[in-house]
Length: 67
Image 1 (cartoon, one colour):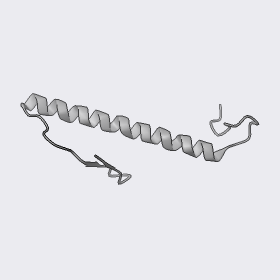
Image 2 (image 1 turned 180 degrees about the horizontal axis):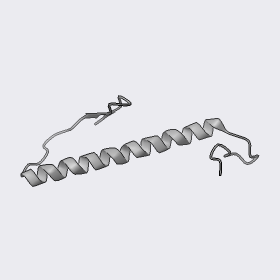
Image 3 (image 1 turned 120 degrees about the vertical axis):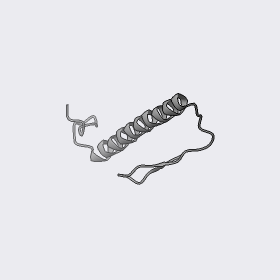
């Protein structure tokens, strides 16, 4: 199925297609961040430490800052 054909008439709806692509990209970024945080917390726990404060990350590709 062509994901660009989202409307009832079967015509291509590029606006909706691009919007769904952005949502999918954001979801992937969130999953990536969750994996990173889980790994960092695990390493800290193994080393006998805990994080006491806010960690800020910046995606090298997009420049998006995660707080």
